[in-house]
Amino acid sequence: MLTPRFGADGLVACIAVDAHDGSVLMLAHMNAESLARTIETGEAWYWSRSRGELWHKGATSGQIQRVVEMRVDCDQDALLIRVEVGGDGGCCHTGRRSCFYRSVDLGTGTGVRLVPAGR
Image 1 (cartoon, rainbow, N blue to C red):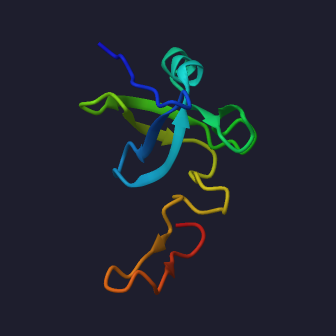
Image 2: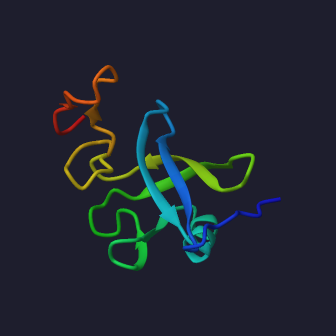
């Protein structure tokens, strides 16, 4: 039974991964309403912390995320959704496919390497 443990802020972290190749696309947050809408519609809805409002991913960009599978971790305080992305297939507002486009040198914590836009 799904009984998510929302944080003190009323949110739970949600990782979106590509349903076809498993690549991590983005991390966002859901509140009870966005989680319910996601389950009801089969499309990803999030809570925008910066705007303080519900956010239907892709509503303006065309990058609708159709949820293929939803998983919850053992503590039920994090979600993972496998999605098929509409539009140009991107997820990041920077124009990249994934929000995780920076690589950090683990030896020093510096030397950030950027993946080119469009990947």
